[in-house]
Length: 489
Image (cartoon, rainbow, N blue to C red; front, side, top):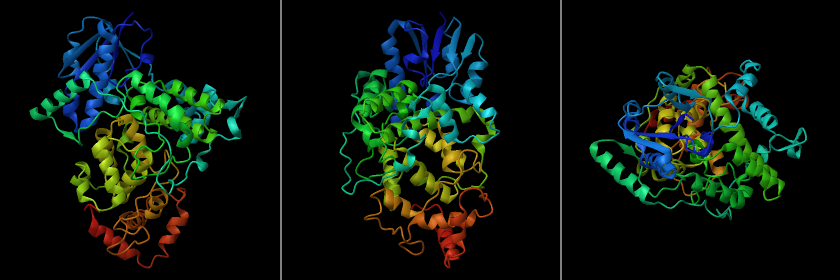
């Protein structure tokens, strides 16, 4: 049996054909020179890779080197590797002698099945349509041929604001315990930093699974204790609770520690056993079977240049306070809290990413490609395939709707409704002009005014655009936001 080369995001047993298959693992120091990673992301990747090598023992060859190419010079046998997760890595392995590239693993729907579905749709590749196809194709949450509960989506019911007392009544996600491997990783990262390799964010206890066992434990805990509440508060934000009822499994999926189909089946069993309501289960299934797979497949299905889309003409660069996670400079309570979460954990859940971070960047007109790189390097679960669709297609609307039907832009009223941030903030979400003007509210109107000629009429923005004509102070708001520029709000 050929030796299977596993990248550091292909670490689960589902990337092997047999339990005893010989394995190659490579730790490349050059990866961490290439970009400024969050310290906790670098720790998680190295910990996961080294834990996997320790688990496999003599079954694996584990090489540490400056680059992959240098390490591979020590290997004297043919190799096979599952389809990598970036275009750069795919080109690299395809150009190596003696390496066979296998189909991708770690996703529910195959590339071939997605292409067959997409080819007949002539560009109208909406996630909702793919999600229905995937449910039918894999037989998930179906009663006969019909969707469980008679509807494909219960998303409309999963938009409750957080409880007024700020308590969901669910236990926090299970946390891993660091061991000697983590201590070794931390010492190595300290040494690398002294040698000149730069990191962002703060070091901290490892909060995310680095082994299959830890990931499965967190999944079981979520299914048993948190899944039932996850749907209702899917879009809520709380300064007092960064985890809410979310699964906190994205890094485990993206490291390849969990098989996504097994997680989907586990959630479906919880519904069949009446351990969780259908709306919550369907919401989780939609995230994993639907959105995650959809983002993976569009990364490969759309042309290479899609990553550089910038149809709204955003030309601003990320300011230093944003890049460096200088939260002390930020007065806006929502943005300060979310950036603090990135600084201290390398993670916030998907709504702060989209409706606070992405929303603010969209309003300020920052280059989508820079934002892709920032999310990639600052989040423990960030990878190019993940961020291209989530940032370029969804958050920044940089492709004018190939993925979504409208820009995800909103004023302070949305944040006020879905969070506890606005109470006690120096800014007023109802004000768009003056010293108390909420930067999100003012930025919303300035964004619409600046993009009237770019956003297509079909983008579900007709009512919002019509309101621009009713704002007697619009010119003053636009001028105010121009003066604010990239200063921290």
